[in-house]
Image: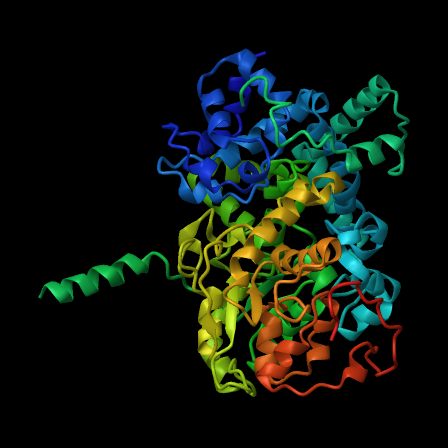
Length: 242
Length: 360
């Protein structure tokens, strides 16, 4: 398997990697580098070295999952590289090969697929009041609890159209539009991509001996959604010097 | 002679950071986050353009999410989001329109990125046309222009100032109110020439604040990300990243004593509000002198206040940090009894008060 050749099929990778001179400006500006043991400069030099084994190690690492995709690095790089684009290509490849389950942060892709990923196809929105439970979001405060408990009256007050036909805020997305989204997902590959995330996560749950089923509220979901080893700011996951 | 040449050079250097902003006959692309957390802001955008300024803006029931949160959290593939965006262009084409006004900053960044990709990789555009046709039988024209909805309000700021009922002057001191403006990263950091003023000196919010009488606060972390970080918020285990980045900004702006924060990004508006609450609950810290926090407003909420709309019709009660301190400084009267009512004026149960963040 030649990972570099696969990466070069991704426009984001070729757009993101011109020629890095290792100045470190991307690392200086990076919000993730400030709070994690993470250095986008090292990610770029690793793929630029074209060492297949090093790239495979990267695809299995924690390091590729720290970036928040703010894309501040794109503004700053004096050579026109975008480490954020390289990260996007690496994350896609990591999931296509099932490597994402090898890392604590990578395993979280299952939780994202089960929430935002399925919201898109079920509701036509990435987030929706019915799908954003207050107990999973304590940071939203009592005001979110109030909004959800009084959602018909609250959205109606602001000219909303909650779960109803027609135009407007939080309108019900008509079945024909949801069907078009689903067709787009199938034809462009995200349908299969979702299946890979499910299948590889199921395998990983079995390997970790954690209960797993098709529902959202299985033990593996709860584990990957909430578990934090609190080792991401130190050198615990950086034996490969990423 | 030298002075004249310098002036011309400076003007020319800014040319690439100006943009044509269509503000009539627009196809409106809604935001997932704003529909949930700031529904009144999207309503006010449509109301102000359609009713106050007589513009034509189409709010299409067939429009869906652009999938941007899923894309930036790496569960949606690039070909997929390009095709979903192509579908939105097809809906615009079917509506007989050529200009898009996009409510979400991440969507705006993605529409920009997709158009840039198609311009530089025409074969990719043909592939996406084929995907869309196979999936939906739809075809599309490329938009003549795309703008973020804050660009549209920016372009109308002087017209709005002419109709202003309130200005950004502190009624107690007679001095300009001090505003922190926060621009969403995806507005111009990816494609600086597509934002008013570019990534370094964006004018889109500063221009509104100054046109309406306020003063923009400069502070060290002005351009730092709010910390959304997609997977760094969506997964509960990662939220320390998101809060830490907002905290860095709050600590940096605190010493300048801003009267309010103005944002143009759905996530930034929500996070800079909610992380103030969370930090207050964790360690009792607020970033003002009165335990109330710094009010965070969307540009439509601010526009509505300037135009004289009732604060409770603008949805200010949907924030966790309350805005009464700002309303008092602007000299805006309000009835506290109408804060938590339905559209008919019937009282709703009041939300529970946080432990540390004062709610008046």
